Image (tube, rainbow, N blue to C red):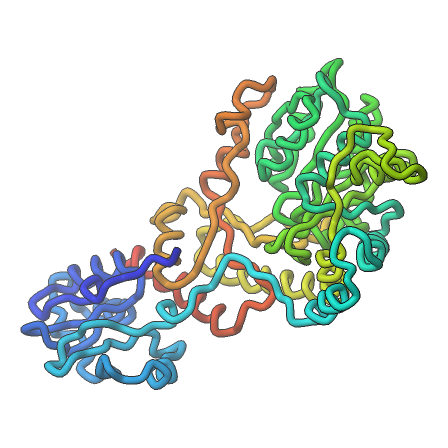
Length: 485
């Protein structure tokens, strides 16, 4: 939900000082305040005006009347919205709206008329045509040509052979674990910093999740902590390619081979990411993906499992469909699940696959923009980008350094006031009530630090130039105002 400022939070009286204006601007995070006398609007004052005045010899105790701009853009509150919006630009970011007595009663800004979401899908390709085809032909449930087509196209894109489309990314993990024979009492090593679906799927099998810390450089599962937590009960490792950056798969596979362990790759957040020029998802005994509405490509809900072993793949197909025999209708070989993807979902997926390279490229271009913007502040640790990896930047996430004059949560609130939605990094699993009593030898120093200081920025592939300019202005306004104080 967008945080909305009142006109009073942007208004100061003519008898106030530059220091008062600085405090007001820092609090409203807009880089501007409106100056009034006897409640009537007489001037505007920006953080840039203040910085220039201080360089020219003014002090923070100087009156705002000395430096305010007496010429400014304003509109009557009854002015049609489209006329007001036409005047907004990267230069004029706020416009006071006044009543008949020239008293400011409201204001217009880019952030008030538009919010940049953390993520939204782009569905302007063949999605509607393919879904309409499903409806027109009556093939709307799990039987239909689009399901098989989507499995084949996604597997071919990633370089996998055995693909099973399912109803969402969480059941993809569960199906992978069950098809590989993970059972009650087995231990599965999982990173502390991941979405809860990773650990929940392990618990569904009645196996024991062993939570370990992440690597400080890649933010993915710690090799040292994997080794430290292997016991006689360990059966598998679940590396998670967090936020789009691949894990160190060669080393993980070496550990797995050494201890005769299975690997289940959680690649839900890493569509399009590569490890040493190979797509993630082709290294594990099983690998899973999510096509939720905020993923790089989407089917609304939906997921996929890749298998290396044909026997496990064949078992997964049966388990996906209630455990029912493929040759004997209504004969059940296993206690299975209804994990099928619908033809409607797959139809959307097929349309998304037609633009998957475009989507990944747009995310990397957006990451380059953010890297430049955050580097200008000197206050962020940028997302991981190891030389052996291609980060898919599912969700652009950086760390606000401890040297920052404001906290991560304060920054998020100030960005929200500028119409920019952000998201904190996942909470560490080991801190949450359902997962506190599982065995581990890890101290979680890295996951705690990243969780407390990480911030994710809007990462939609259809983010506009205007939105990017607003974000750039917002970042500079926020940090310039706190530095000036």
